[in-house]
Length: 252
Image 1 (cartoon, one colour):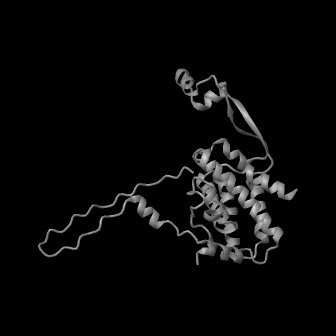
Image 2 (cartoon, helix red, strand yellow; image 1 turned 180 degrees about the vertical axis):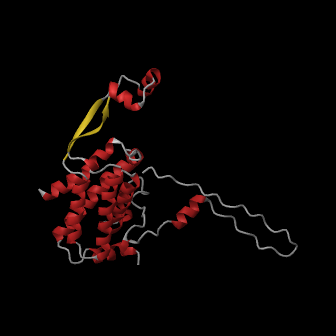
Image 3 (spheres, one colour; image 1 turned 45 degrees about the vertical axis):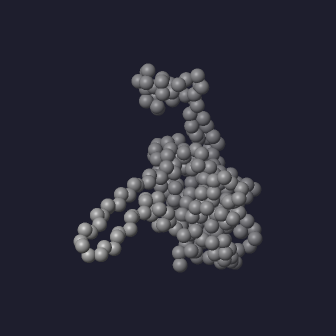
């Protein structure tokens, strides 16, 4: 069925932030020693405070509800339900990989096996397995092996059946986009289409990261409202309450 295939597709495409935060050092100015009255320079806020101040403003619930009504205008209930299913399922899978599976760090390797989910259909290699009795680091050191050589000698391929690749996900997004009447939402779906295609073409992690941020914002700050819908049910409110500022509908 089309809905089940759509959900399976986005689950299988869940491969993925090890964001590199750059430390910012401010200048330390010295106060004036003139005998005239001095207006003291306020201390520069710490880096964390400056980053928080520059973060996108989180849309209020009322703003989200109004934007949602505007974005979904002209769509049938079936079309809205399908859009919700795909965005929620895709965000959930990418979010899990981001929070618990270090997927963005692994995708920094353009030759990593995770890229197989973007590139291939059918039976693909999804990873390596080896005996739990082996200490990989110790064996590599003792036998002077690289990680690839270790897997070649001691590993067993882990395979998966991937029915959909990045091209199929792009086709799904194009179907969803065709149902949308609002130009801002159309633009956001088009952005996802382009980032998915670029991820497959370049094997550059940032394109998957960009896709994740767009899905996150669509899920928690348009189709649902993360801080209100989930904030009371999770110990870590930082994820559902974080807005990356990617949605076109709020740009104006």
